[in-house]
Amino acid sequence: MTVVTILLLAILVLIIAHRRFLSFRAQAPTDYAATGPAFIMKENLNGEILSEGLIYGPNGKMSNSFVARMVGEWDGNTGTLVEYFTYSNGKKMTRKWYLTLGTGNTFTATADDIVGEGHGTISGSTVKLTYRIILPKDAGGHTLDVTDWMYLTENGVVMNRSEMRKFGLKVAELVATMRPAPEVKSAHVSGSNGYDATAETRTLQ
Image 1 (spheres, rainbow, N blue to C red):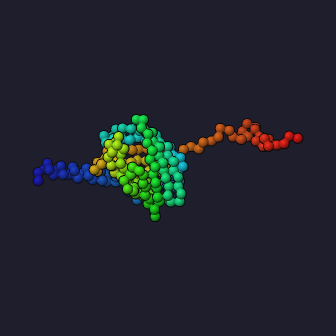
Image 2: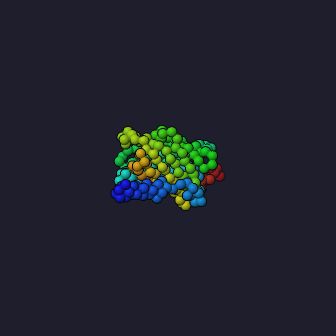
Image 3: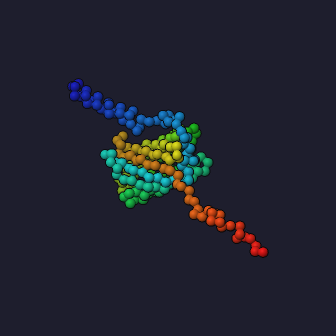
């Protein structure tokens, strides 16, 4: 074995080790078991949620961005999360997740563009979900392996980071925020201008 071959093998080992132990994929749910606030899916993925995100291509450059409105609903241990996306290129897309809480800290997730079931783990302030997604035909129709992490922050905002791979190679990355939609407050507060609502029902003497 020549010196050049040995050097090439050493470089290859270093690259593999870096990708496995010093990258996004190296983190595990157990790393966040003691973190807080606790991610409670029935609360943090419930109601109306607003989101903004960036999508990066394999070259590390941003290739698209989006805004989204999401609506989560729960009935016992099953729930849905409907996502309405509007992308910077003008495309619009809707996805509906079906979520089922399992025993312990696990759950499953399905959607029309997902192969089989996605498998998730809730740990501390985080959620990890892995699944295989089928891209739309206008995006190539490829099937990608997705690792999706959500991190709950102290103010209730969820930071989302996803990595998409094909044949083990990263082809795209997504970074997004998810936050509860602000409550719509009435423009008129009863009594704030001296108006007496009870006067409407009084009988004139």
